[in-house]
Image (cartoon, rainbow, N blue to C red; front, top):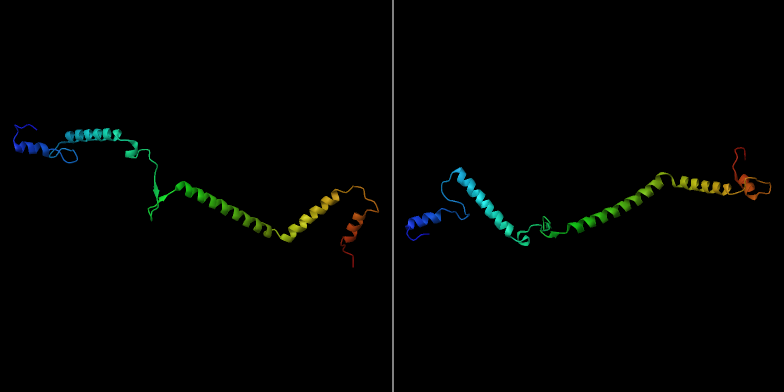
Length: 149
C-alpha cells in the first residue's frame, strides 16, 4: 500500500478480497472463471506440497462400529465368520449323514451289509463242492423252504 493514497483507497484495496481469498464486489463471468482457476491452481499447489501422512493420502481406511464408534477389525471379523461358517457346515453335514442313514432304513442297511459279507465269503470258497463240505451243509440246513413245517 502506498502512503500517497488516501485512507479510503487503502480500505477499498483491503476490502477487495474476502477471507476465502476471492474478490469482493461485482464481477463478470470472465473474472469469476479466472479467479476460480487461480484458486484451484493455488489449492492444488499447496496440496501437492503436503506430506502424504498429513493429508491422509494412501492411508488405510478405518471402519468403525455404527453404534459404539469403536474401530472394527474387518479382516479378523471375516476370518471369525469364515471359521464359524465352516463349523456350521461340518455340523450340518454330520446331521445330514445321520438323517440319510435313518431315511434308508437302518435294519435294511445292516441286512444288505450282512448279505454282501456272506456273498464275499462264498466267493472265496472253491467252485467245486463235495459231500463233506461243512459250510454248504450248514447253509442248506439254515435255508427256509416253503414246504417246511
